[in-house]
Amino acid sequence: MKKTKSSKGKKLFIKKDVNGAMDPDTNPEFVETEQETGVVEETKKVKQKSKKSNEQPTAGESEEFLSGKPVPREDDNKAGETGPEMQRKTDTKVLENRGPWQETFADENTILIQRTVRSGQSIRFDGNVVVMGDVNPGSEIVASGNIVVMGALRGVVHAGALGDERATVAAFKLQPTQLRIANHITRAPDGDYLTPEYPEIARIKEGVVVIEVYQMGQDRQTKIG
Amino acid sequence: MGEVIVITSGKGGVGKTTTTANIGTGLAALGYKVVLVDTDIGLRNLDVVLGLENRIVYDIVDVTHGNCRLKQALIKDKRFEGLHLLPAAQTKDKTAVTPDQIRELCAQLKKEFDYVVIDCPAGIEQGFKNAIAGAEKAIVVTTPEVSAVRDADRIIGLLEAAELHSPKLIVNRLRPLMVKRGDMMSIDDIIDILAIDLLGVVPEDEMIVITTNKGEPAVLDNNSRAGQAYRNMARRITGEDVPLMDLEAETGFMNKLKKLIGFK
Amino acid sequence: MLDFLLRVFGKDNSSSKNVAKERLRLVLVHDRADMSPQLIEDLKEDLIKVISNYMEIDENALEVNLDSSNNTVALVANIPVLRMKRTSKRKEKIG
Image (cartoon, rainbow over all chains, first blue to last red; front, top):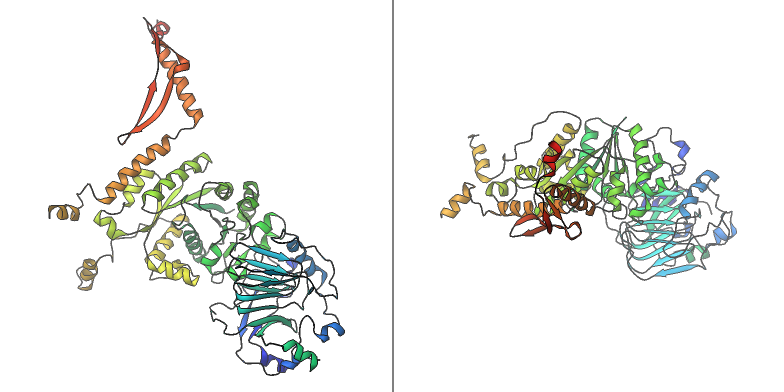
């Protein structure tokens, strides 16, 4: 299934890709860092509702990913940048560096957090993370798989932290301080304080982090369609 | 070679972070290369006050632990080319860095920036020791309250013990009308007690709350009295001789009235 | 009314600012008087040195404390005297 220009119409937010941003050698000057404005890219809001959900690529169970070509890895350098990050101690479980990306998706490995994740708290898990509660600003969730928040997501999240670009982030209220999937880092645009009205899901499409209204059963539909 | 200035107070809530953000921005507005360092690990706030919280990828702990290079962790301000932030970590605690590491960090930053302004955490424990480790000059922030002045006195003693001599004082949140009524200690009262040089006085100003809400330092607001005070202080830090602003002006109904009818 | 006028002209000593200042002054004397044990020891030694010129004292029973009561802080030393000296050591030295 090829994605075409028409898929743009589905995007609620278009988050620009920050590939290469993690590579320190691309910064010619001392002060030119990937944290500067424009590197952690702003999202742009395009309020258009999706209709052609069957054209959307899906994460996880999608046939497309199971049978199709593996998602190309980021180059080694970028992958290396993720390394040290993952070696930090975790609240819950120490993430092992699983080495190269594997075909098997970490969906058999999921933890459930039944509380509000507050500022200063950090959840790091090698697998999927489901939070039944809010994720407050100043907290962070890092998962090698997907992240689902049954509440408001306002902290920093990093799905697919070991480099899996198929990872997704879904939340009832998706308002993260910063949202990272694999090696992509995005943030909301300055001065954009709109509250999302629907559950939303973020994932990488065509090398770009895209946020869409979460549609129930959407993945299955795609599979059938 | 730049200058490393630590902004400290002992007591919490007197406006260290607001002061750091405003003085740093003020210096950057004057054209200097400035880096603001948040050493309040575990309770970082400088990023939020500057409106840069969503840009953080690496922090000071990542730098000291070698997870990234120093330049990778520096966040460029959205308004000023010359202004940068080195954010604190939020999911660690004060013991994640040591005074030696901060000293080394300051030495590195000093080479690249004209001013390295360090936001110190409240208290006198490890976080304070970390924050002052690399500093060459100190600014003590207080408010005209017994508790804040007492803590400032303690801090001045500790700074002197750490060979940081002649710190400068900022009196924050002064309410000129209350001083006039005799219900608030005046600048002279505070100076009399603490016996250090005054860097500036910041009048209580609602604009601070508003600008902090927006993540924009008040120093950029030309209508803000506090902003004016911060602009003056930034210039004093650079060695300029700027007179204290007239706090009595525009306070009180009678003054406003006088001004209105051209009496003043 | 007089109270009000005094307040207006800032002559009222009981204004809360003056209360604050007084309390602060006192509390700071305390804080600053919170001498380290080392300093207290040094002070003791110096006291003994000086007093020994004039009288023989029980050095072990010597007590030096910073005492605070009634809005003042005082240095209270309790020095048991064993024997007075007839001549001052200092004079001897000079002589």
